[in-house]
Length: 245
Image 1 (tube, rainbow, N blue to C red):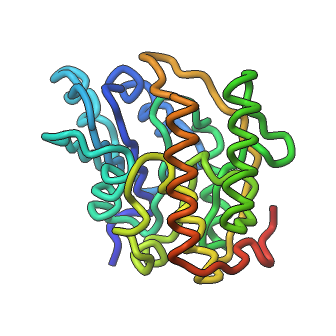
Image 2: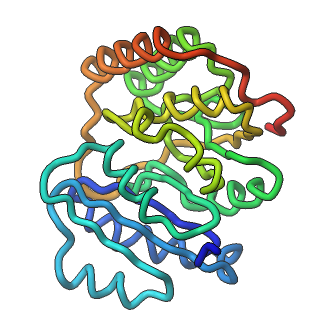
């Protein structure tokens, strides 16, 4: 039997200052106050300070902090968090405030009737500001969707929740490799299982502390190669059949 209702996995790349703010803000969400929450932080850069860790461990939640001894990358860090998760549902989000914490209750609410719920910048009132990141991201998204026949509207955002049981039934070692390409790999394999998915609109937020590692050309080349490799190896089926968007 699972120990918690929701495991929130937060991958970090020297984001101690952001983590010290985002976890308390999530705990303040009224819709989650009666839920048993577990936070799993996987640090792939500079560790949090002792004072920050002390503050995190004093909060009213189960807190696990893993500091990778060698750089593992985003996808492998997330995989570590998934294996550690002890909740009925797993939620993955960035810890730098690009992902809006106030969407968590909406995502969790839809988990009662869906296997998988993700946030999308390209659905309804969703938005991705900035000329390069906004337009470039939209073009990359369309390109990847066309290669893999993905039906979700945003295949790169990586803000989602899923039933832990369903997640463990997927080929995780195949999915969680590389960087942000893990997310369209995940969507691809969910399509094969005919998982019942849903999306909610999201507006991309602003990083509060530190600097972004966004590299558009490198990401385009990496994700394109990853998508073509996946296309050559696997089959495809529609994902969001019967979902409520």
